[in-house]
Image (cartoon, rainbow, N blue to C red; front, side):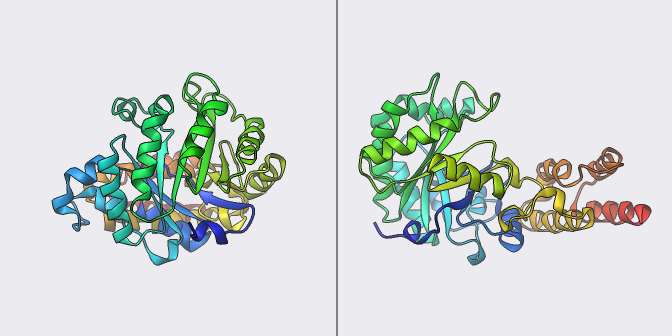
Length: 325
């Protein structure tokens, strides 16, 4: 299938889907300051979209799933990440995503959250390859290129069995988070296994693009890991937290504090415009990421954490900057 995947540079660098981080407001910030080669949404439940299908076109508080799927033209190519173990519901959600104008669909087969796994989704899909293949086929029925994000195995590394099962369903791309489900993020990512993943792809003579993910600090680090592993692309997650300039090649330490705090203000107002105010506490996880690494950071963060809305956060930041001038 010809798609945006075929026109990307090699290697390419993409944003990871992070729950309660890569929401529409943060993705817009990335598009402004350092646009990735491909943008991912947070993961969205295909089952939820299916069960709320009568409200499918209501992107407001009546259907928060639709709000999570809001995107701007500046984010393209943009991929909607979905999860489900039910082919019918996945087919519906993929068609909806296609109708909304997304460039691709990504299937989450790596999330270790127990609530997701109890649904047979996320990392649990590693244990049910036939179901995974059926879900990929269902997603492809919508006509968009389909990719998969997964892990190297469940309790132990099982790339020799798991990747060929995915390849048999012919996804456009596979992102491998280089830890098992059992390891969560408690050990360093096994980047040496990315070479094995690429070799497995090559052995099957496929055109599937292979992306590595895990512990990537910045763009220089990503380039190094791609060169060493042979990966077509690298997905960066926590490295972009507090650094929307990452994909422009800027390290967090290169950015003046004032610029970081101005970006945090912009993010807060964008977040508040898209979500009910009662959700403002979700934004506060960004405060530590943006306000860190300088004398007095802990005191400033404590002050900013008291803010209950974007206006209060901005006022606290302005006061802190004035006092430090």
